[in-house]
Image (cartoon, rainbow, N blue to C red; front, side):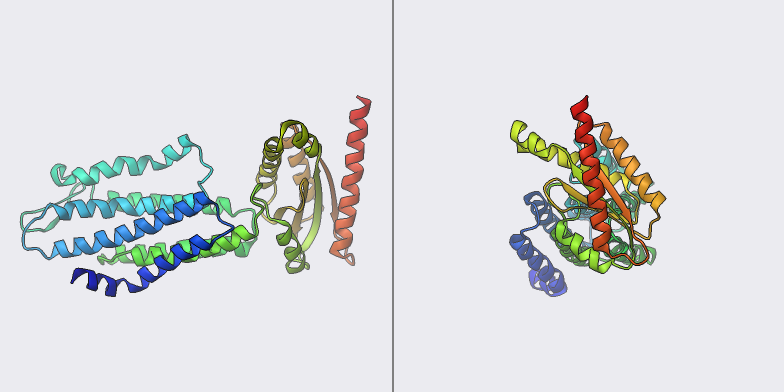
Length: 359
């Protein structure tokens, strides 16, 4: 009877989670690590849903049962873990162990408090007649959840800062809309199961990430060549400057130290591009060692400052790049601007080569 009622109450959520698992199995742009994180998320949302419904059954019992505080502790624990795992799909997958541990500290501290609270009475406990009673830390689960919600939003904003306003808005919509629903339920003290919200958000978020990954170069995580050509058309009227960049000696690195050394070099300089450019600029890898930065509604001073900043950061590494930039004149086409930037980049490349030969 419980199973039938559970399926009826959660039919849409179960359909979404099942569909998401099928989409994951068919994905080609998503890494195996990301697929595993998504499957784990599906399992956690399902576990939270089951725990909630079992806890609802336990509420109807006339007397205290040990399962109710354990289920409550599971529910309190699972929500922040869902947010952490959701972040692992994109924004924290490259975190080091130390940084990840620091992120998890509030949850690591809270979980033992939840599971021992029936005896310590710190967070909550249940009386003999099965009534919920809050302890001095009864707000802790909500505070921890709010903390991870803010962390989630912060790192998503940081992760998507190099992309267009539309691309930054969409994940924020996916994130904030379910969180607003949770806050709404909390304000009005409604005992709601949030698994439906999480499953819908997870489904839409994954589809967005899948579309997003199709636009990204998998090695450098810059936008790829297809994105470059698309943005040339979509942003044709707003692009004011183009920077052409070519990395020196990539072939030498690959031939003498292996492709892994070349990959490290490409990742290093790409990370400098992402960290150095302003918000209205987008960086692309359009070839093996060729890069382009497009600037929307930016003046020449902004472009020059970015190029100077990138040069200084690259000089701190063992790698070197040639640069050329061009600003769009009133009647010039983007093809003409790109051609000028390329020509200046090759002039800079020749100058660097000549300088090295004379040293």
